[in-house]
Image (cartoon, rainbow, N blue to C red; front, side, top):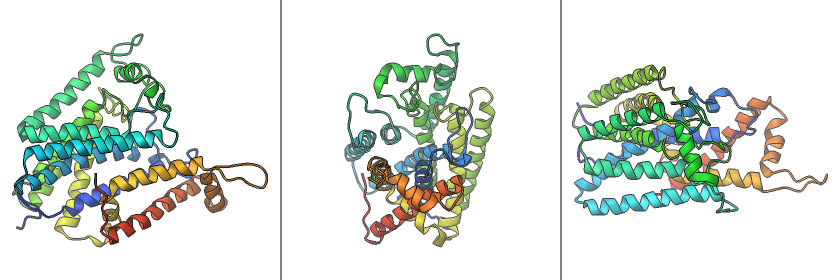
Length: 377
């Protein structure tokens, strides 16, 4: 039995690129409907407790960040790199990702008095930093203990504390202790749409780190000298355990993306393991790769795609086009009404806009890919 990836290997794990590409494509799809008033339920977040397919995207991304840590660091350590060099790379990458997140939040007006400080890239940066340090400083057994401790401590905090004036263990938008901390610490720099909570807030970063560490553990499993099928079987079994435990914990600590509950960590981590195992089996073992090319193109330039689409979406909402009747609708509205809304029902038109948006960026990313331009941070 051959090994696709073993200790000291330098081969790139194509299945991880595909998994990353699928995830970032899903993120772009749900973030760019033609109309926010007309979207199918799988492309919207759960109102509060519970989950939809959209609620899997962000934890998948953090999980992938974790998987990549031992794969990338292992190659550098095997190549004779020093830990000091690794720490400098980690710090540099963390600062760049965090700064990109702040830039997206502030663009184009950069009102520093109200700019939102948390965000998707900011949480990725923080979790990447902490998970990298934990990986470099601890062994697998200690990492398992850390994951368990993070989930249990967060559960105990959320179950026994709350915002002032709310019952103990309140998990509502206004009453949870996580929401209260965000309001107190962040003030006017909280998510404007949430107002009383931030989905990438401070306290909920604790379990988000656990999600990333689940990826770190998975990456180390992939670097073992076990056979390909042993790796796949291990990931499927571990993923199923996560799904079952997370769903059972839901009865006591509901699955909730905005609060990033411990049940949500295990449930989505189990899902991520299942999908990674399937991609690994299909692509790296069976070598069925032709279908996955677009996702490889997305996956190797994921940050560029995230930032680029975020900037384009904002610009299309800001740029006004003067019309003969005196109105000045945003560019996005003109594109949506002129190319999609007139021929299709509202939800279909909104989805068609999002798909066209992704295809446009697939073309742009394909140009970078063909020219071997990979934008790394």
